[in-house]
Length: 350
Image (cartoon, rainbow, N blue to C red; front, side):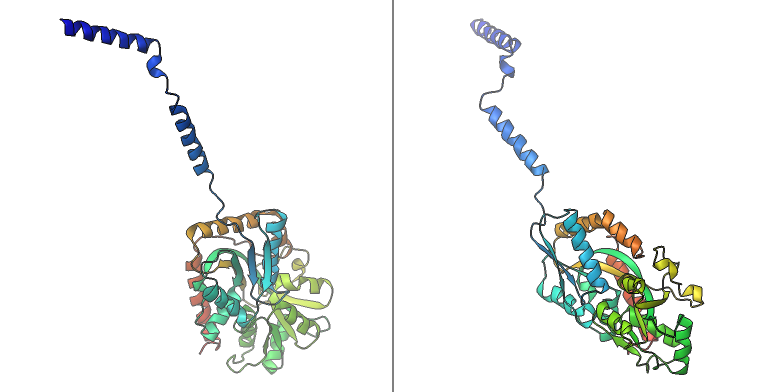
């Protein structure tokens, strides 16, 4: 009985305390612990930037060419739109159709997300024709930036007024017409070779192509009359057409361009020549960067593509907007197989 009375008194006291709320009050030491946990959770939701250092964009050709133009446009937009907190610098590293700079990234910059490079189909052609041990597939592909049609031009005082005039001259002597363009095996030479083929010439014995390390040098050769025909990306040589130093004969897009300058240039197809040929350019990084670093670079490229400055340049220079960050290794593999066959058929790969 005595034990029962003690238990009853204890339970009654407990119920009174609970009714008064005493059991629900946290101890003074619990509050700081809860606050610290909240702070830790908040900090975890604000991730530190993945990229924090100055960045370099490599243009693997001389000044004035398509690589250089694209690299400097990217750097300009990143800087002016404040898309990155650190400085972005462009450097030119010409040589071997873009493979010199590619080899540098592959061999010397592994794991470095702060060195990126603009590279394209021209370099893929050089890789195939030279049977290079360094390959574009070794790079980390960030994004496909754009597509660009090939522009066929002549000096302002040239007797050629159409591509058919050029083909007619080639039929008489395939080596009588000298073409200026980018590196050997690239898209510029590929298009010139197709003209030779249309003229019935044997491209394996053709010696009419002069390769230049950049669009600026090739343009000077055309304007100066050292060659009869120039082939390059349209964006590079529009200013020379606008100034009257060059005459445009054709562009290799499927449809007529929409810009003021481009709309006046006839497509190859409209001249009865069934050729559509586009050059693409990638933004790449060295091998060995982390998935987080790749994602950060893809996000930056996507912001550049979405900018007003990029869209304005695409429209004015008649670029094809085929930007993507998806499926690019498979795309490159497909392009390599197709281009290998084309260059082999043209006699450029033995």
